Image 1 (cartoon, rainbow, N blue to C red):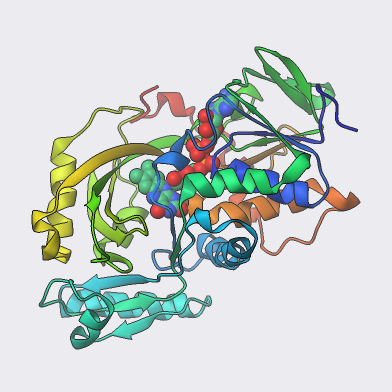
Image 2 (tube, protein in one colour):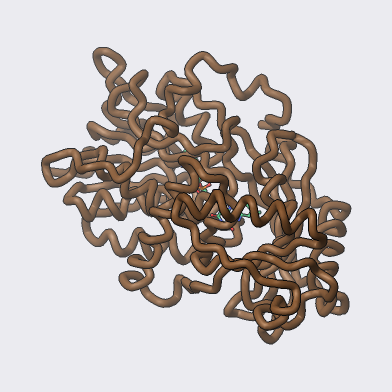
Length: 398
Ligand SMILES: Cc1cc2nc3c(=O)[nH]c(=O)nc-3n(C[C@H](O)[C@H](O)[C@H](O)COP(=O)(O)OP(=O)(O)OC[C@H]3O[C@@H](n4cnc5c(N)ncnc54)[C@H](O)[C@@H]3O)c2cc1C
C-alpha cells in the first residue's frame, strides 16, 4: 500500500520515456511516483521534433524496438486525446543522384527483412508526394510507417492516462539513491525527504549517467547537441517528413564533430520544422548561427519554396547519447532494484512506448514478470561496466 513516503516504483524523469514507463507500469497495477527536478517535458523531450521513425534505422535491435513502438504509438493514439497531434504522415527519403539511389535501395531491401515497408518512388513521381520538392532529384523511398507526435503533449497525456496510480512530484531533484544490504536499491533522497520503493527507474535522459552514479554504477551518457529551426506558419507546403540520404550516416556517426543534414517537415499548426544538427560539445547552449545557416541552406536545397520564408525561432536540445547508439533498458545487475530507461539519443520520442512496455514487464506488475516481446540483451546497462567515467570524456561539458 503506497504512502506519502513509499510507493511500488519511483521513476526519475518526467520526459516522454519516464512518462511511458509510468503509464505502462500503472496499467499493470503498480503505483508509481514520477519525480522531476523541472516540469513535465522540461528536458530533451521539450526540445525534440517528435518524429517516430523506422526509415532511418539499420536492421538490428534499435529497429526492432522502433517497430514495436510504431505499433504501440498507433494504439496510444486511440487512447490518448487527439491533441498529442499523432499523424501517420510517412517519411520520404530522397537521393540526388543514381549512386545515392542505389544506396537507398540496398538499405530499404535490408530493412524490409525486418518488417519495414519502403516503396521506391521514381523521380517523376516525387512531386505527387511532395509538390514543392526541388526538381532534378534521382528518386526516393516512401516509408508509410513513419509518423509524428507532439512530444511534450504526448508526455503529459501519458502521465495523465496513468490515472490515480501515477503521482507526480515536480520541481524536486533526486540527490541520492538509497541502498541497503548487497547494494540493493531502496528508494531515493530529495531535499524534501526520502521516498522508499523496491524499484527505481532511471529515466533521466541525458542526465541518466549522473543518476546512475548516485546508485554507484557507470553509464556513459553524453549530450549530443541539436538545433532546430522553426519557420513562420505556412499552408501545408511540406506534407511528410523529408530528408536526404546522407542523414542516416550522420545519425549513425560516432564523431563528436558537427554534422548537419536537413530534415524538413510540416506540422499541423503551420510552422515547418527544419532539423537537426548533431555535435558533441557538452551542455553548451550558445546559439550557433553558422549551424543554423547550414541547416537552412540544406532545407532550401530540398524545398526551394522555403527561400523567402522567415525563421520564427530556433531551439536546442541535448540528445542522450550512449557510445553504441543504443539505449540502456532494463535492470542493472550491479545495483539490484535499479532499472535504466535512458540514452535514446535522437529517437527517444519514437522509442518511448516500447521502452515503457518493456520496463513495466520487467517490474512484474500483476504479480508476475510479463513475457518480453524483445531480446533485451543488446540494451543491457552492464555492457558499459568498466567503461571510462563520462565526465572525463572529450565533449562532456558539465
Ligand atoms: C534537436 C533534437 C531533435 C530531436 N528529434 C527527435 C525526433 O524527431 N524523434 C525522436 O524520437 N527523438 C528526437 N529527439 C530525441 C528525443 O528528444 C530524446 O531522445 C527524448 O526526448 C529523451 O527523452 P527522455 O524522457 O529520456 O529524457 P528527457 O526528456 O530529457 O527527460 C529526462 C528528465 O529527467 C529529469 N532529471 C534529470 N536528472 C534528474 C534528477 N537528478 N532529479 C530529478 N529529475 C531529473 C530532467 O529534468 C528531465 O525532465 C531529438 C532531440 C533533439 C535534441
